[in-house]
Image (cartoon, rainbow, N blue to C red):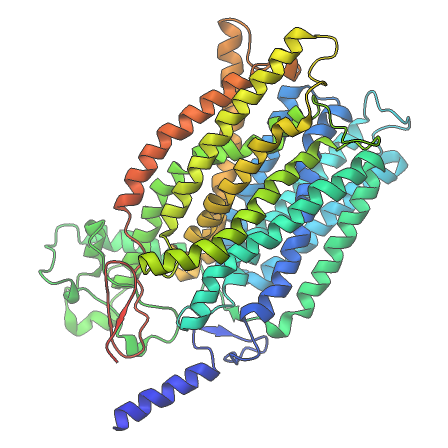
Length: 586
């Protein structure tokens, strides 16, 4: 009875306090009722909303600014946009590492937001300070070099700011939910959906209101709005400080993985134990921070790092010669991510086209919607955000409850199934895009003088909406996957891995454009001319559709063989199962 009373007391205590190794803003164990969950994430989603408003206000119009103000040709502008987007989505690898290892997520978000804000201020100055302006004339035929230099410094400062802001903020928001608490764990599964809902609202305003101001009022007015909104949201983020739960950075997450590798190599000639229970692990009663992982059968050569040669000295052995099962499993998690990361790159290449060629296509079509009102080319991107918002809401409120009952899975379906389903939409997007572009080129051939201005810009609506719906499955799924399936000490890096998919895909897209331009130009007419009417984007879209379809087969093969993270969660005794959920025997 005393044992049952102790368990009951511990349970009541855990309802009051949060024992997931987090602390409150004063370094104490957080009080569950006054910290974390939605009361904290609302502040976090608010700054994400403003950051996405600023980012897409810049990103979606970037190719138009480069071609109209700086007067770059289509190929150069597309490459510059892809390079900038690539750097912006690869920088989080560095920012995520610093957040996880040294600074902590709150501090990293704050510092990177300041850099981001300085970039926006410099961008604003480049349109108002006379010596930094593109030129003094109303229509700029050749911009000053100093303007070009300041402009690129400003947008790359935004890239650096995003590098710390994006991985740290999203993982910081997810940290507000205790995974060992059943109710908070379910709320956390909804968090990524509502995070992207807020993100898309920022995107929607960025590509409508901000782009309209850029087009009708001026670039400078839009920059002032973005700077003001970012400064205000930074203040809101700081106000929420008492409500947050914080995780103290444990040091470099790469050192334990290197220790596992070294220990496994040193013991490569030792035989495997007949029972995995003989591998070294810290008793759960002695674990103060973090969670223990269950042993899995994959990548067994790493298990040798946990083989105990002398049980009497096991607790005192050098971590470079003996690792715990949890450390070994964390190393396996990172290695298992690599094939999935590679298999999602073709999807990223499809997404990369939305901010470049899709937007540029909008400039060649009739954007008049009556009464003299003309849609800015980048505003068509709003349909993508609309598609994603609707799809996320339907998935969260209708599909997840139905799928939970049907499958018994807390998420409804497995994360990799959700990602794969979204990839089908990316294939459809590129097929539809190719057909619409072929239609547009046919109209140009019939009337070269008027060109494709007889076609409404809403011919592009299907491809934007379809990619938006696909993003609701694949992009949200990738965020959840890379946060959930990395070691607990690498969660900011996990979000950075997700962003690096898009970043690497942008670089690959640029290389693909360069290679195709070289090859097709050498054996005939290049697919990429000086403008869209002299290009064959439909061929390019068909190529991407074929690549993505072929890759989907590989992805399905990898997903079916994937072994999910398996955590010991129960308080008294935990038996590990194959599906990643624990069986409590309290």
